Image 1 (cartoon, rainbow, N blue to C red):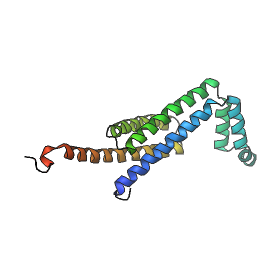
Image 2: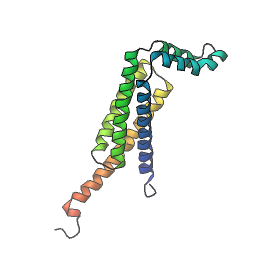
Image 3: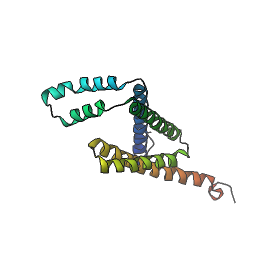
Image 4: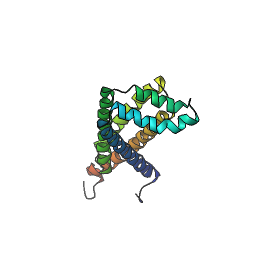
Length: 169
């Protein structure tokens, strides 16, 4: 990473961040597979108890309790499968990018654009600061991936162009 310019460094930081995000999603999905609605509700009660004792109208704590009280087995299973698939796709693409596999660049861009489109919808319906931050991060990684893809493609095209080989002609 020492020989990289700032674009390259930013790209790799973003890609590694996406990989860590994917790993967290897989771990979260695996944990959800073994959780019941009652267990999750109890966990949220434990996590919010102190905050609610200080401020019974705390926005985040009351919303977490509301969501936890409405959880169903089907909802938890859906969330677990969603997180597992979502995380596994990210990890696979990040691994391919770390191995500099050319095919992974457009797939990563497509995946990020799909996430951004969905997140854009969610921002209209129920905006949150965390979702804004995630969407901005995804947009930045998309731009960095596009830039790195173009550089990688340019190097690939030059390497395969017979006019640029020494001794050709």
